Amino acid sequence: MKKVLFASFLAAAAVAVSPIALVAATANVGQAQGGGVQMSQEEYNAYDAATKTADPKAKIAALQAYLDKYPQSSVKEGVLELIMGAYGQLNDAAGMLSAADKLLQVNPQSLRALTTEMSLHKTMADSKTAPDEKQAELDKAADAAKKALTATKGKDIDQANWDAMIKQATPYLYSAIASAALNKKDTATAIDNYKKELAAVPVEQTATPGPFLQDTFFLGLAYLQSTPPDYVNCTWYTTRFVEIAPEPYKSQYAPTAKYCYTKYHGKADGYETVQAAVKSSLIPPADFKIDPAPSPADIVAQTIAGTPDLSTLALSDREFILAYGKKEDADKMWAVLQGKDVKIPDVVVVEATESVIKGSVSDDAVQSKAADFTFNLKEPLTKVPAVGDKVVVAGTYDSYTQSPGQAVPVMITMKDAMVDAPKKTPAKPKAPVHHAPARKK
Picture 1 (tube, rainbow, N blue to C red):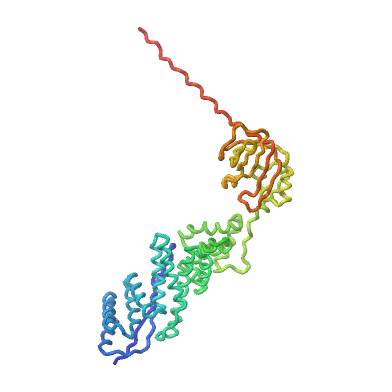
Picture 2 (picture 1 turned 90 degrees about the horizontal axis):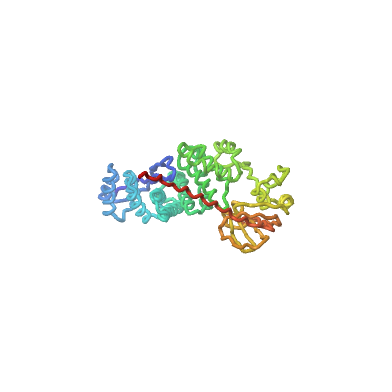
């Protein structure tokens, strides 16, 4: 009987970093010494010859022949790991996946097989164009990753090697779970796992082009896609990516980072402060903040305070104040308008009868096809305009009602309204008749 020590490895195939392929994270092959096992001289010779075969294709064939002859071999798990590794040398993803499947049948807790399946399915997702097929591959990667995170050490792996494999695999496992979640808009799960991924690596690895920098951007994207969006965290993580990433990715994704900032702050001023801060820290400092944009009510208050004569404001500004101003500010505007006559062009008809027209005047009202003005007509119409028609209406400001939270947050009522008759298009003058000169006889 011969005692044999067999080698095994952590098969971590190239980890996908789609859609931004900054750096391919290549596989590291770690070796763990297994415990001693007894086998016959004949089996040992077959095993020894197979494991020492240099050519990957020949090695796969020799190892498979060994398993075919000794299906109950006590080193079956290690042999399948070697087969998986040889397929990896050949960049044969299908062969690796097949070997990983067989390895999991022998040991469902195999970290090597689970990590391999995670990596391969995540890579396969990148080649899928159909959304359901892409999600299916991402879900398979996430499922393998979840199992790998709870895998337990086998008796044939020493603690030091196990710890090294766990440390190497962990960030990629969290990344796979986060990717699957983000793709199906499960932003809470995506955020949780992207943060765990980035916490599992030295911070300097998040500050160089590669999968961890890329996932810093995806973390920001998950914050953006949350309900409601978290524009502050989106700003931080996407800006960090943009400040560190090389071209063309810097220019390509800068608009997303700036969008998050301006969406929250209201304008771009001060963004350079964020750009400088993100370079020195992966996560936002405790005192990091972005001043929010002024609310519509704040804008109204500023307008009221900065406009000595409110009657000089444009129609759209007057309506904005009535719609969004605090009651005291809206009433100041109304005190100027009530009882005043105005002619409003391009009123889009929403409803109409002989005596009342409800129409859209503001851009928001037109877009939502909702009325923001009610015109009580001075005289019945002889011809009622159709919905969608544009009319010119003159009337007197009578009352207004705020409706906070509605698509159109104000209704302005006019009295003694009159619809201007459409201007008649002047008839084109007849072309002069040309008479040919009479011919001489």
